View 1 (cartoon, rainbow, N blue to C red):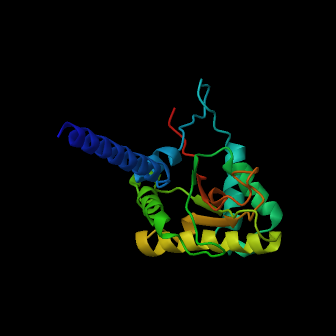
View 2: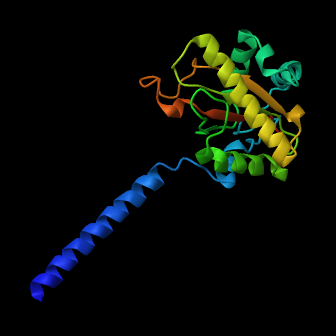
Length: 213
């Protein structure tokens, strides 16, 4: 009886350990984020026009940014030149942004089922009243497999897919979503170009809201 109890107990512990390990792996592989996480990342940092210890607003720079955004607003993704894509990237580097591991089916612009929750969270976040009036850049990226030309087109289609989803399902204005593709030129993991994490979408809040003095 004692031997049976010990044997049963050992098997139960082994089973629990195995289930715990499996659950841990599943959780670790879940790259979906919540709408609140996206919202926190995209909230603009308040700036002032006067002397302050915080970030300063440069009216001239802001005017130039606004003018540039208006030149790419409502443009088709594939029509952007390399220079315009790089200018968007330069501006985006200074703005609130979030890199979402939205996965797509291999060689496709179809959103992977495992990433639908992240796209839905993005839609909820961009619909929040606190982000009203902002212009967002939706940038598509691919992995390093394939030619530059093919990947460039694929990244543009992926950005377009996200924009279409947001407009159709969350009522966002297409005028407020600027899409751009970078192909395989800006890999997240440069050491492993074929890694699926390179197939992602970056969202940037291009609006700089100025706080009152």
